[in-house]
Image: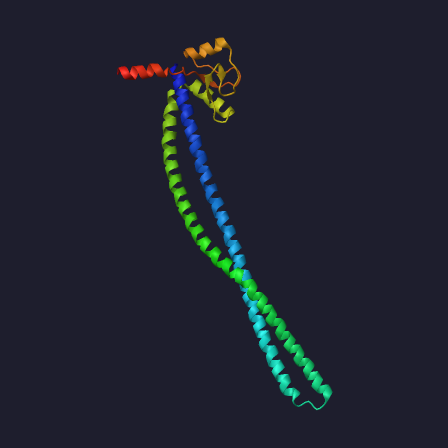
Length: 248
């Protein structure tokens, strides 16, 4: 195989690894943003439940205060009723006392309703607080894992980019320029293997004579359809290799 073909294949492999790592490095912050967004949503839900529970408790305290006020008014009216001089005055006191007692019952009924509503709220707040504590722990652990993975990826990227730079200098300038143009056109894919007389880049059948030229490998050739740089890897004779290994 032409040495230049080996070089462009090596360059393509390095570019593929670099692209894969760059994609992973770019995706890691998005991953963290997603889990933090989920955590924030759960925190907002917890705050809403806490606010609902606080409002429930505040309403109960207000009603308890109202009950005390109505009880005091009723007690005062009962004392005043003792000094009533006419039936009309007596009935008037009775009506006012009945109103205060009715307000007391309404407040007590409402307190009972609020107590019933508060039970699931309190249980949900406790459950959510426990779940959030665990979720925060998991998020922090994941963030630490991502930071470590990013550092590893960045280190590997630096090594690959250095290796890629060295490999690029070994190529003839004209071939390197051609490789870069093709890679840009096909979004990173500049080299394709010929398999069963087809270019694996575009899957177009190649002319038999052209396939033979590619198989000879004595020059760098481009796919007549997509323009990718072509190479051919002869099939491996497994039985022959096994026999050679046994002989060794």
